[in-house]
Length: 234
Ligand SMILES: Nc1ncnc2c1ncn2[C@@H]1O[C@H](COP(=O)(O)OP(=O)(O)OP(=O)(O)O)[C@@H](O)[C@H]1O
Ligand SMILES: [Mg+2]
Image (cartoon, rainbow, N blue to C red; front, side, top):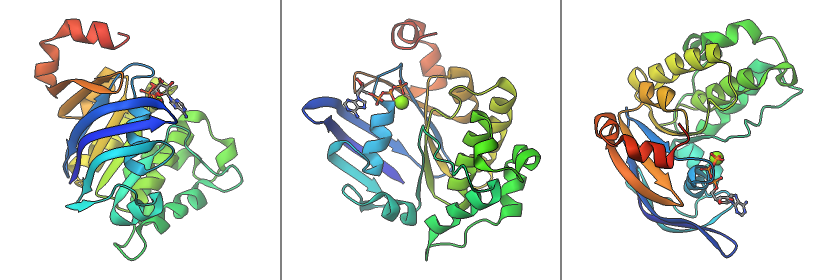
C-alpha cells in the first residue's frame, strides 16, 4: 500500500534521511523505532511532503506520490498524526473531530461521531470540553481519532505515547489495535516505546542517523538484544 524506496531527505544542506526503504500494507502495523534524533519524524514528514526536501520513490496504492500536497495525500487515504497534535483550543472535542471528516472529501464516507466514540471510548469522558481544556494525553487521543474520521487506508503516527499517562497509553493501544485489526487500516508507528509498539505491530524497522539498521519481526528483534541497547535508550 505504502512503498518507500531509497528515501533521502534534507533540511537545507543537512543530509538527514540517508536512504530508507520501507513498506506498510493495509491491516498491518509497522514500527519505526529509533532514539531521539534518529530521523523518525523526518521520515514521516518526508512522506507527507512537509518541510524537508525529499528524493526517492514513494508509492501509495500503486501511484507515485512524492511532491503531492499533504491535503491531496489525505484525500487519497494517507493519514498523518503529527507530534504536535494541532488541536483547536477554542473548538469542542466534537468540532475538532468533525474537521477530520473533510480529509476524505469525494473518496469515502467518513466515520460519524458515534462510530468514532465507540472506537475511542476514552473520549466519552471529555467530549463536551474544548480543545484547550484537555490534557496532553487527551489531545493526543483526539488528534488520532480526528485522523481516523476520514477513513484513511494507512496512517502515520508520530510518537503517540510521548508524555502520556500509562492509563491513556493502555486505552490508546486498544483503540489502535482495533483500527488495524477491525478497520483494516495500515499503521506506521514512529515510537521509542518498545512495549507499546510490540502490542500493535508485526514488523519493525530500527533506524539510526537516517538509515535502517535493522528490519524484521519482533522475534528477529528479540534475538539481537545488543542492538537495542546500542540504538534505543532502554
Ligand atoms: N527543521 C529542522 N531543521 C534542521 N534539522 C532538523 C530539523 N528537524 C530535525 N532536524 C534534525 O534531523 C535529525 C532527525 O530529527 P528527527 O526529528 O527526524 O528525529 P526523531 O527520530 O523524530 O527524534 P525524536 O525522537 O526526538 O522525535 C536530527 O539530527 C535533527 O536535529
Ligand atoms: Mg520525532
